[in-house]
Image 1 (cartoon, one colour):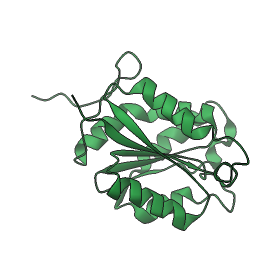
Image 2: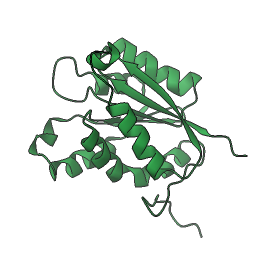
Image 3: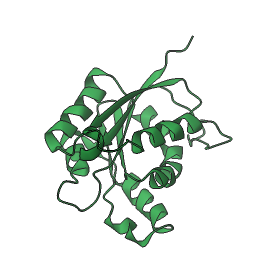
Length: 178
């Protein structure tokens, strides 16, 4: 039996972390990953407040302790003063992957003109790819559809476990070998 790959799902929201409202972002990420991935995986979920030190500590824990190959966050990517997810991600990553944010904003602009206000980004910490998504469930879908074809190969390149997608839903891109 193949061991399941741990994947971090982090909802960053003051109100959801306090139980004021139901977390809809984390479950949306879980649903999309369940639809996309054919490799056995298990979610390692967290719901935390918009506090940069807490976000940094959570990302480090998921990468370094839990061994998550992929960590997907939702929330905290806007321009509001408490939106600090990109700053926390940059603080814990060795390499930033700006193409992820560029593509997500490009796709989101097809839906809503305020997509330029979003500061989604991605970066690498060790053998973990961290991807910041917006907080709105429909935007989570739009953004994951855009970047998912590149995620498995990126994880290959950083020495993570082999992850594949269901080609009927989303075909992962890997260069052809000779």
